[in-house]
Image (tube, rainbow, N blue to C red):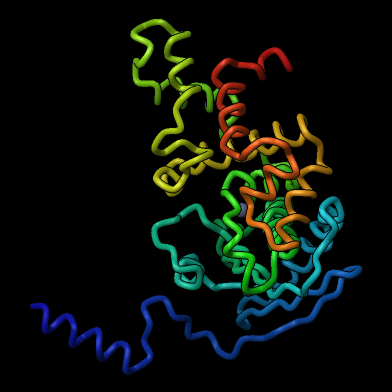
Length: 290
Ligand SMILES: [Zn+2]
């Protein structure tokens, strides 16, 4: 059995027949400049209309980046013809909800033509590019093309600032749902005493916590992970201001990693901040601030 399977795989690889590889003719490329932001859009011929949609979305997205200083390097946008092609390109499998992935100077995106029966709505695409380009801006501020991935930037910080910039709170878990998530995670730790449960939840940095340990729940509970990231970033900006957030990124750009940069710019460790945020959710500080 094993021999037959590996034989078939060998044939597939020798003939260049990758499982999700497109057979769609030669890719095309377009250059685009919007203010100081420069783009290269790469796509297959059947996505010519999708590429036009992407250009329009970029025109709306780029002005939102001014808040963080804008792009420093050109960004290449690769339009993949299917969801499988996107997953293949970014090395993830089983993320049905994934539509794009940003790195230092690239964004891989699933062709908006395939987002649904009628393709992607303009607003969804504008949001998506505002979000993804915020990642590029941050990575470009925080490091160079080889160093950005070693900065230990936590998911809540990068995703939170991206969803904040793209105003995407409505897509993810609201604070009420985060509160319920933490209450359930307490698992009766308070023995029926809600304040006890709250205390224990606020104290522990546990497995699958959406802020300090999101990876175990990222694939399936993405609404919670992104919701927590969004509200944590909002909490950070409300308490310490956007200037300090920029300072975190600027300090990373001088060579520091995230934990040190955060502590220097904000005045507490990111772990302490995560505990503060967890307390804010669990003790329902957000109800009083409504
Ligand atoms: Zn993101």
